[in-house]
Image (cartoon, rainbow, N blue to C red; front, side, top):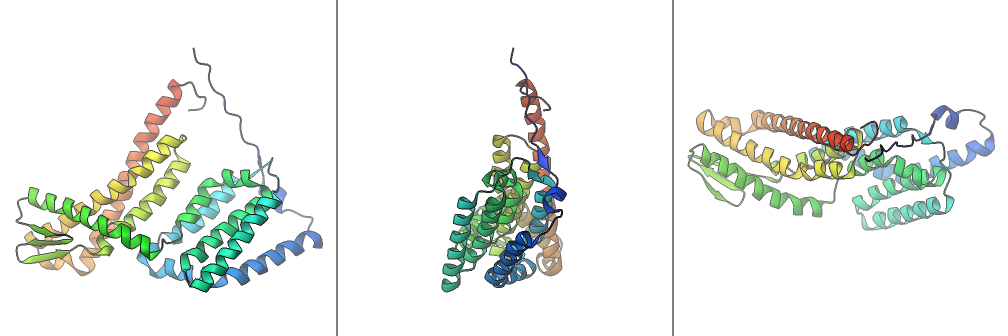
Length: 304
């Protein structure tokens, strides 16, 4: 018989113990200097990043991920056994500053934004050690996912997603009995032509679904295989839902009105499919959680 595995509870330190008084000058001065240095170094990249979150639909998920990551870090608290790691933390911070300088010289935004994230990791390591970084793996991962990918990567991802979504949409259109011909990402139905643009490739929903998969995996799921599974399923879910959106657009244009494939109605279809994708990945996560719980109970893990 397998003996139950009883996990050792992680002791956490209340934030009031870390942030409470006394506040002598020797404690305040390094914090003030660090904040000033951080603002001087990263005010420009942070301003551009916030503007991109607000104006670029491909990066809009950052508006949600950033505050959620802060809340999760606050909720997770500090480890009682947390100890500063000055050497590793200083090394990470120096490396981040060098990346910031290189990115500024090359006018490469992703490098500068990654330097912000690396600086945060370095500060956490410097103050509380790398084990605190591991304790905060979920908010730190979400913070990284809030940074938009470089255009070269998004373009290379968008093209195959366009073609896969076009193939699936075409198959659904043929299944419905609508005459259709496909040329790459151009779909022709009687008297209408649909062009699957980069914005309709499913890349937006894919990045958001990956972030949602990481969040669900960190909050709901307990094992690494279960978390990896929900992430792996985000890609086919994005393709399937976007292929269904293409089919729905062609169906409405052919049987109802060509105007339903453009303007407000087309954007509304996109939002509806986006919500559907979130619902699908949430439902799959519930199934995975149920299977994971049964497996852990079978293994004799306590509190499964």
